[in-house]
Amino acid sequence: MRFNEAYSGNVFIGSHDNYKEAKAVIYGMPMDFTVSFRPGSRFGPARIREVSIGLEEYSPYLDKGLEEVRYFDAGDIPLPFGNPSRSLEMIKSFVSKVLADDKFPLGLGGEHLVTWPIIQEMYKKYPDLILFHIDAHADLRTDYEGEPLSHSTPIRKAIDLMGGEHVYQFGIRSGTREEFELGKKYGQMFKFHVLEPLKKVLPKIGKRPVYITIDIDVLDPAFAPGTGTAEAGGITSSELLASIHAIAESNIRVVGADVVEVAPVYDPTEQTQIVASKLVREILLGWVK
Image: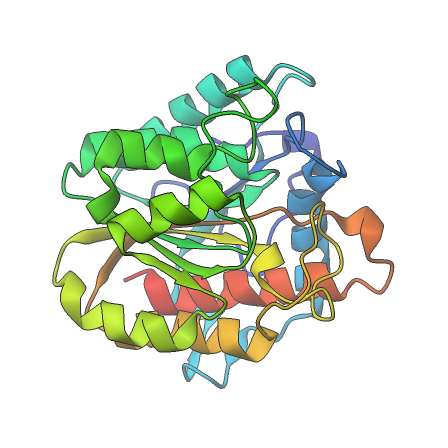
């Protein structure tokens, strides 16, 4: 079940070798073919894994260690360079398999369009799905300069599929006037902040299945400069970690997640990839039941 067997040593720290026994599956989506500004996020999944070696396996936030969660790192899906439509189909096929095996999919991006085929498969399995979108950008366009396959469109596609009342957006601080009007129409777009509005939303979710997509650019560029479309005025890494922990400590049922838009080439300090790696650790420990 693992891609790129020759490189199987390059896995997220603590990954187990047995897919069948795993509760969660980490997989990479090295795609940046539709970005509107700077490419490079296709290198994100590999580098997130590589820097994970610097993590402690124990989380003092959650008082748990990675040895307590069985997860399998499948490597990167071998997406055909420059072919977004075929790449999206390959992601759908892989996620469909993971869901059929009743495992928690944890995707590493890659640009944000990679989330769209995941949502399609999640919604197919969970018709009452709730989507949490944590990002600097609204991603509510129907197209970008005439192209509907764009990293500016996945949440609009999700709303068209699931209905806007099932989609919650946090930390949004960039988009067109039309995107913000659409967010206001549904009343579930929370601008600028994540933790405080999240705390108000969590008690309302009940036991419905929740998929969570995190764009690393929700963080201020001071904390995560390594991303294709950096946006000033973001939240701190502390707030994002606290948000992950608030979700973990709530009673909601998280059924999958992704962390996207890490572009290592723009951050020689490695702090972006390091924070992304820590987010993955906390997600594994807090959201995989």
